[in-house]
Image (cartoon, rainbow over all chains, first blue to last red; front, side, top):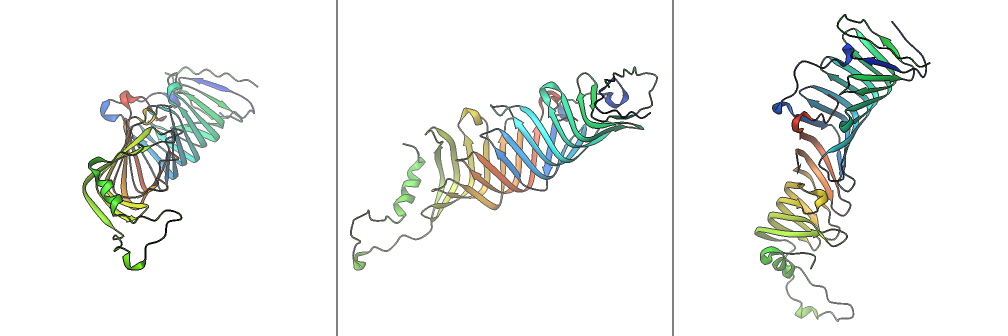
Length: 165
Length: 159
């Protein structure tokens, strides 16, 4: 199945691409490591940290790679408000993989936005578009800007397509 | 007073540095010129120095095991530990084996030494760094690694 409609928005509810993996991270898995091949720039006046050149983010649940990564902290520096990965973004997580030109993540909202030639694949299924927004706590995603979908539904999932043309 | 000096070590160091005559003062005749202080003088036993911010509030407490004066404006400090005093940078510490501290610009740097930056639930390590307290910026050059402990699996990244 292949959809290609400019401006269309697909809302996919509880499909396999977003199905959470069995088990949740416990205290021993609450770590994330970020490394890079280039410099790190820390601006504690404006509460942001920038990693340059082949940035890898890894934790027990998966990994993300990008050319550059910026972490924006709250004014008190204690929590992360936003992370932005730019350039050749690739990720693998709990059976899913994807790519885009940019990824923006808002931890408080559990929202991740893939921007620019974005694709997400799981097994034989994949979805693509210029903009993919994940709502991780709701297991939903929106695909905008020339969306494409290759999806083989399984019996245990209810699929809801909303297409605005 | 902007700068506090523990144990008077900086006072000893300052006393050893050459003092320039003031404007309009005649230079002493060469025959009476005292033997100049050595270009380097090491002080061991630790030191503490407080660094103010632009508004004059103490922003950093710098501690080290030893300090070596390389020039009137540059110091070599071993086993530096800098602790942020400002509420905005609460819990932020910077540790390094050896740093060069330039008193005229406030810049701290070393292109070879390892550095560790700690804050709340994160530890940042790397090799080679440039720290400019006046701009509140740190650049780490190589071997960058940031370990974050996400309390309760908060999901710092979309993984």
